Length: 196
Length: 130
Image 1: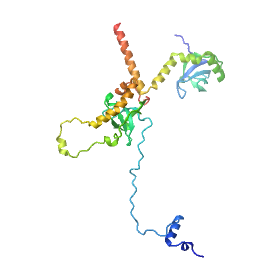
Image 2 (image 1 turned 180 degrees about the vertical axis):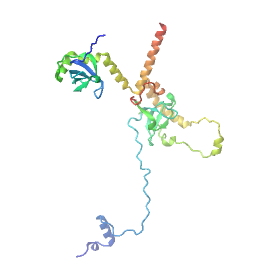
Image 3 (image 1 turned 120 degrees about the vertical axis):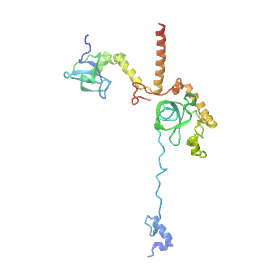
Image 4 (image 1 turned 120 degrees about the horizontal axis):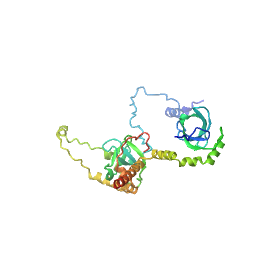
């Protein structure tokens, strides 16, 4: 009786058939090869935005210089931050990113299906430009207050968004005044019992 | 001052404690100086013995015999128009208004605030002209 692997030709092919049958290899490397540990970075799940916040939700901002003001959520960015706008014309809140942890979502929804957010408005759009040209010493002595320069691009984007948004906002009575009003708690207001 | 609301068989009361808080029930029997048997077959309250502290008497009564069963109480409520009479009472109206106020959204609260301001403006102007 002949052994089958000899009959089917060459030891290479035999090894292959052995491996295919799920058997362990007959040979293995003598030296250990260092394999880098698998990084756990970058495998993080994308941020979950709570269900009460959707594009069109009116949110109350809780931190930063616009705290207490109400704004409209336009979009949820890839980073999980919310893109909001006052609109700027109504309450001075420009297109900006906010963390969902620092807003109260209200049950008031605005139909933003007609609002066209420029595709360029993403997380990179809001990233601050770092300038290395000014030395730290110069910066230290540069006490003159300079007015922030808002680029024409920003102004154009703001206008594009607000034009669409204002159409919807003015349609609903009182909504414009509501967005312009600041949120605050007064006597006998119990925020944990309040519905937003 | 004369008392008009008594703890009696057929007295409609409101529960002010526990999971049945705010629901109506009928006194069916009196156990002792502290407790009575109530039945809330019309409002989903189980027949139970309850202390007087946990109920508040209403002006309404219905005609039932002592220890009356659920079907009997239901019929008596229908005959006496208890549910309608309750809905008309200012107590019930206040409770309903409170519930509505409690469920207002942020936007609704803003609208109420504006309406209240307008009202007080009108009142103030009227008072000034008088």
